[in-house]
Image 1 (cartoon, one colour):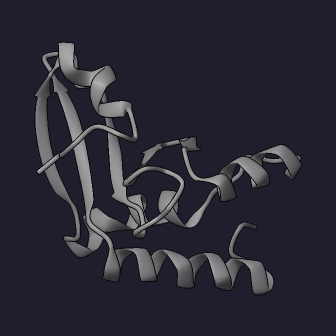
Image 2: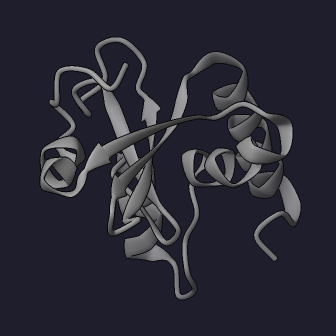
Length: 113
């Protein structure tokens, strides 16, 4: 169980902190409906401004470490926050054209505002 024990509590606390302090934005490409959640990264983070979150992947280094070590599917605080955000009304939505999707996946894309 992902929420069992101290690690689960840290994961939940981290997700709550993300929801309280970061902007989460679901980016939806039209007409294909491909989407991901962009989570603002802390200032100075290696991600270049944001993390890209999918159902089973996050671009953060914590997810990469967990996925490499875990015998089961991994989850990070950004992924959990992205799943919880619609339930607590903490997510914005931005529609883009399909031909812009790959550019928006880049962590260094200038703005999603």
